[in-house]
Length: 241
Image (tube, rainbow, N blue to C red; front, side, top):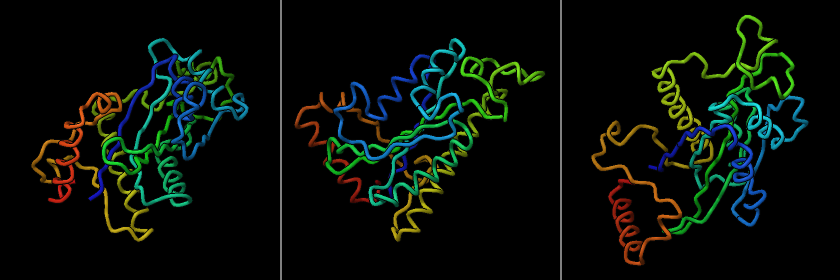
């Protein structure tokens, strides 16, 4: 069983351009050599094909304390490379972003502890839904006006949803992302599958692994790294990973 990982983050006003540079490996991130692929879509005409200009406008005009973007971080199967990986990313992007403005990047850094490649997708999505009304950048991110849509900004996708509805949407997204990944694994003759369910829902009685970021890994001693890798290999041998 392959490990399923999907993380959903919210980016505040003022953070979009910096994060866009990070996932595209631009600016101060240019020296990082793990960028595999980039792309964007559904930009309004005023952005003139510049995803950075779009996020700069979101940072400038989004409402105070508003979310400038939402980001999905999704683990991708290492076996799917080249056009097979691009096909998977295309299908994931189409499902998650739909007609909303988006930007994606695929990174393939070397796994810090066990070697190999950690192939994953970063997908930044604007919550502002297109409605056929041509708005300038200064208007697009204003509050939506239900009585006179042409006088306000674009409506946000999550506008009016209850916390329960938002939670249900995340669960549905996890299910569909796993389904799309498994369809591509099957299509390419790979027997392993991912499972979006929690360990408890799968009937697996072990604690979920805690994600170790690069900073935490750098602080581990040699003995701690060896113990961590040995434990993971033992779990993999028992079919728990």
